[in-house]
Length: 170
Image (cartoon, rainbow, N blue to C red; front, side, top):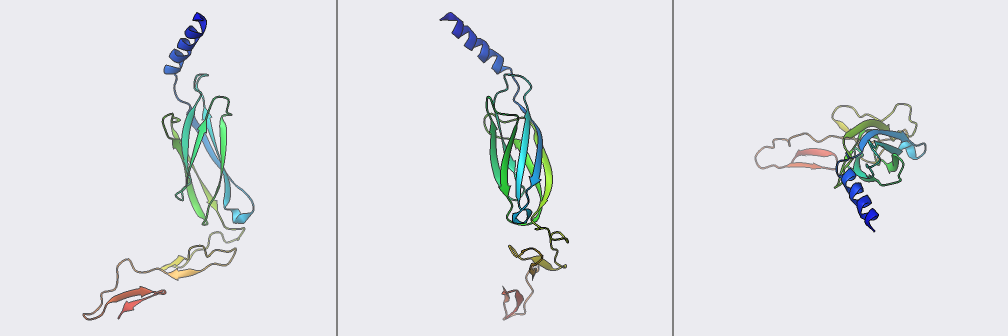
């Protein structure tokens, strides 16, 4: 009976001084198909000692998405998550410790997604125009006039309007 209590006390003492596992690396792989918008994000940790059993982190996908990820006793040092970007573009993927048992450190990388093999890359609209949301379909896309940063100054008795891609004073 005495041995288990001593063993548990030793385990608790050793765990109390152990450092949390460190984030070691993050990498992304763009999968073929779906216009190149599906990716696999791989995150690896470094466990400084055998007592470093658990830690958790969050992956910031760069487009507002957030993916929780955690390691427990017996898990491999690398975890993966699959994610689909809704819009083409270049994104910064960042992973950092999160939660009560946060991994130590932060790592980041960049990737470009969603051109569907279009040779020219992500479509670009001329100055004063912006790419219409969800309009990119292979080589086809739509640009819309960008509204001015400030409304027009309308003469007394008229009001500014912006609708249907048009602006003016009525």
